[in-house]
Image (tube, rainbow, N blue to C red):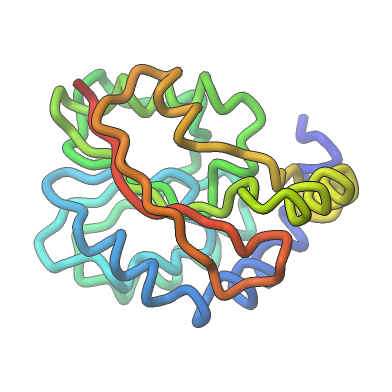
Length: 206
């Protein structure tokens, strides 16, 4: 049975995702997606906003747990030039063999995964040795005042946005999960102050 937050997310997140994480961040999506090569796994595909940026000939498997998000993603999958398969699935329980993928892509997803350590462990498991994790995420701000604001509103933010937290630090979590060559660039996202701090980059399974 779904938790209240997951049920709320099924209703609110599709339109929030398209409105707030669509056109404004499209150039950043394109940058991180176009580097995906080989057999690709996209975690938390949302409404499929990344699909248009995959190159022709790339073999993509995308997983998304929320039914309403997935329905919108299915429409966008039909227009993709990549060979794309969309499945129901959660990051912490990936139904794939170890070493199945050359690239894993994650965009604006790590914030809403409850057990991030377990999820990154699964991502590392399904990546082949030397495979790349490519990500684009909002993070806890390095600015003390903004970080204070994030901490103050985080409980309400989680309720309103189906478990999304403002306080994630992907670099630390990636290193804990055993990834190597973690190379994340701090960026300013074209989003409201609580989600303006971001990172874009890669990590490798050693």
